[in-house]
Length: 308
Image (cartoon, rainbow, N blue to C red; front, side, top):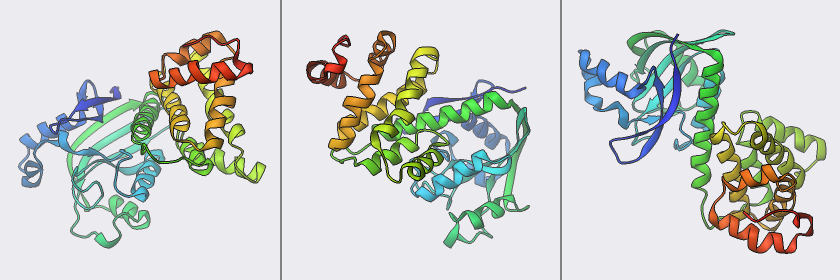
């Protein structure tokens, strides 16, 4: 049985990125070794694989490509992109893939390779109707190594969730400083926090006929965050994600979105001292000052809450 996790690793370009670490070694390091051992000139021309961009990254150029990759991640049997050219950030250049097979208890990464683009219709390479069968067709991928890695399904799913959350946090930190978040924008952001968020948002719209931001904030943020702060303090990445989402709502939201933060979210989090104190450990000094100097002084429903 092999062990897989995701870690932030320094790239040759001076920034960190999220990479898969298998049995203590990052995937690009394996590829560097295999390239040295190979006679494949294309592999050797790539240089350091540590410079490639993770294909699961939410900074990929086209939103459709991001949706496509995350759709493949959920599939039980597929050829799944792992790394892309850091310059293009799409599927038109270097694409490192893995042959994945899932069962009830295990996930198999059977072999690693790169896409051969010669037969590909490059006018529609990001169209999943063309890309998916192209990747699955024999002869369109040059396989570098038969890895036969086997992962525990539960551990693998945790890795996928952590990757998604780390990427989401990165996107939240990049939210444009001067952008104003309207209710619909906020709903889309909150729906992007979890894998089933879009379905939950669709159900919310169907039930209420519109977006009720206070209800949405309670269901999508408050209840899961309280549960985490009470019982799952070991899931720090997940807690950071929810707390950062709240700060983005406060900092960039219009009046309706900010009101949902000041009333629904902060009031409910302050109901229990332990939850309130732990929440304070995950937010910025700027947000603490807002809560202590403004909210606690005017919101009578929070008069019991202590300053952070």
